[in-house]
Amino acid sequence: MKIGIEAQRIFRKNKHGMDYVVLQEIRELQQMQTDDEYFVFVKPGEDHCVQDSANVHVIELRCPSYPLWEQWALPRAAKKYGVELLHCTSNTAPIWCDIPLVLTLHDIIFLEPRDKSNKSLYQNLGWFYRRLVVPRILSKCRRIITVSNFEKDNIIRKLGISEERMAMIYNGYNDWFRPLTSDIHTSAERPFFFLGNTDPKKNTERTLVAYSKYLEQSAIKRRLLMADLDKEYLNDIVSRNHIENILPMLDMPGYILNSELPKIYNNAFAFLYTSLRESFGIPLLEAMACGTPVITSNTSSMPEIGGKDAILVNPECSDEITQMMLRLETDPTFYQQQKAVGLERAKLFSWRHTAEQLHQLYHSIK
Image 1 (cartoon, one colour):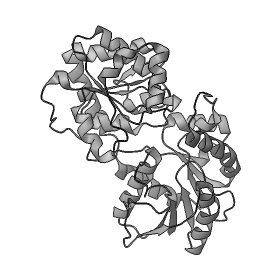
Image 2 (cartoon, helix red, strand yellow):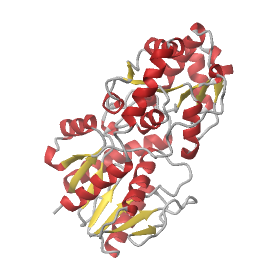
Image 3 (cartoon, helix red, strand yellow):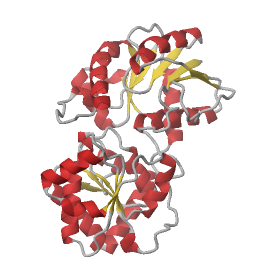
């Protein structure tokens, strides 16, 4: 079978969640012994993270913008290479395409009430594009994949899609996320780690307020390592909440490469994954696989992925986040229990299992 896989952004240097998902899926499919032939369509970039092999052909398509690339260049190329099934992996797909489509719809956040305080041009343009495209392609998709039971139920309920057309396939995590020897030898020097950014769903403001309260109550006062946070956005949060005490305690290196994350998780005292909403949450698994205790939210998919024994807090209550930060610090038994909970939970997920389910799905479509 000739299968096309849309992977437009995997060659860009600074990858994000959906890019990593399709990249790992392709790598696993490439290693599987099948008679299938995969055509991976990408936009040129500096990180050539997938190479041609006997069963995988990487096709670079040049086009000036994301919409033109997806709506014009992609369907033309898929037809040129004789693709029998086209898997679009990042929430959207070509509106005019006579090749059978499979769509990975990671979430439908773009259909939910919008936070008007979000000033990111990139995020806002993406929001408008998805709202324009998704309703027009759903009826054309042979199968719609999503990444958690929470999101599957959400899509069925809000979009009226029959359960027979839906498929739930969990994400995995890379096997380099595992316990390593920390190069921070003094426990008190190990920081909290938070992957916050300006996206309102990441709950950065309440998490920073919780950290401020932690600093006021902790005898140790650990630092907070953060990534991807705009300085102006941070200063607005600090000023609005009068939490100037956090500023000397923050370390913000900017974008963190995925290859650097295992060391960071292992050096961290605990990981704060306090989003308001996630369709899956790969960082939650990555930290757990490293044996790093995680404080996460009791909303959306996070209880499903983290499991019933995870530390689940109300992400809208900064006091709950603070209390769990302090409990991990003052209760060594609880801390060790959470390390064990995470390591055991992470064993249930893998990219190989994800790829095997994808392969089965491709061949189930008539």
